[in-house]
Length: 134
Image (cartoon, rainbow, N blue to C red; front, side, top):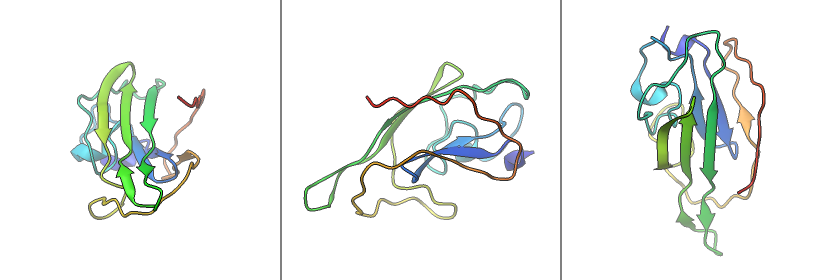
């Protein structure tokens, strides 16, 4: 129940997490359910399929931009379709994902990073991962 069902995540630039969770008929905290931007934005709707079915996450990510002096210029943004349903619409991230506390954007210029799949010790499988630069 709650966070103990299929808990994982997809991190953009190793910093910003989209929550992967079995949220079908499973109550948990709002900004920790499937398709949330973890601890920042709850999804607009719960679009989870039943357990045992493949869940689809289409993540459109806009990386943060920085001024030449390294100071922050524009925050990262995420648009997310979960199983074909718009659940995050150009959501502005307040900072990197924090396990405890409120995310805050500290001005630390960073370049491109990789995606990271989180292991929370729950059985989760991934397939058909596509990355395309826009």
